[in-house]
Image (tube, rainbow, N blue to C red; front, side):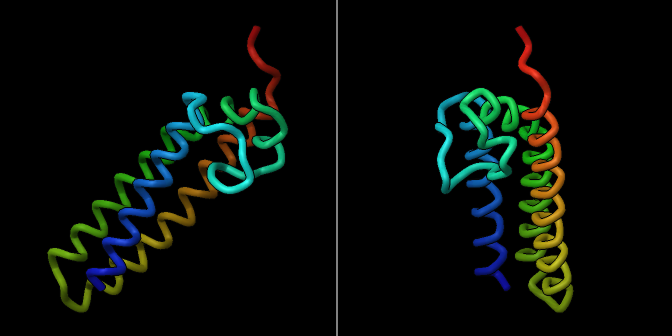
Length: 112
């Protein structure tokens, strides 16, 4: 499962970097990369606000996924399949939580 673990870790890091860049306004609103809920994609302001709210849960997810992948690679035994499966579940749960945080922030009125 080593190749899959490496791929999962890389994808998690790329997703974390994308959320961070969007939160800083360096990744413009687009239809390919970033949190793609309707409320977040509504305009440039909601795009940035939503991604700012998602930064912490996204990086927590990345940390957990990379740790699970590293342990799976180091063990390289029957438990690796379980660890890889848990990493995939964490990615899905983390994406859901990050999207909820982003959506809530995007629906709040901007601070003036």
